Image 1 (cartoon, helix red, strand yellow):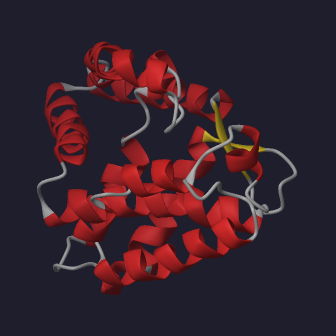
Image 2: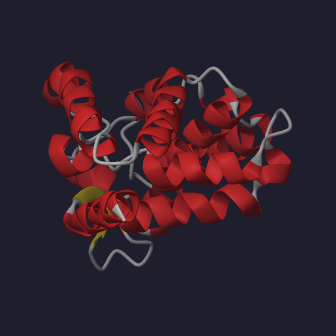
Length: 195
């Protein structure tokens, strides 16, 4: 019963992820998306778009990875992709959060899920590369659908988006080529400054 109690406590802890608001708006621009919604969206993308991965991936492993990659934000908070000050302390905040949150689990799951998070962060395996690609592509799709609402609010420049996505092609060349055309359309529409 101790193992089950730990798992149930972990599940209740994850409920807090529903309260974390990201900077990206929903496709209809009505409100900002939550962390849990983001993770769900990535999980659907992982199996729906798996054929576009550069290398063969373990889809279930990738789904686990994207569902668990942001649970650390329960403690660390969501750091906006273009927040240069927040990015300076992000890694330290996230490691502390990973220690606590994954540490709630029974030993075997703690080891497995923490390792998945570390693998996602390292971006070295086919699954991690594809998961990171999805994590980068999803906000671009939402920004495009919402008329660049978040980009406009934060005065994001094309150079920032391209810099953040310098390795996006590593997970899927096909998705990246398509996303580049979306980025260019948003420059033309004035949603991204062309700098």
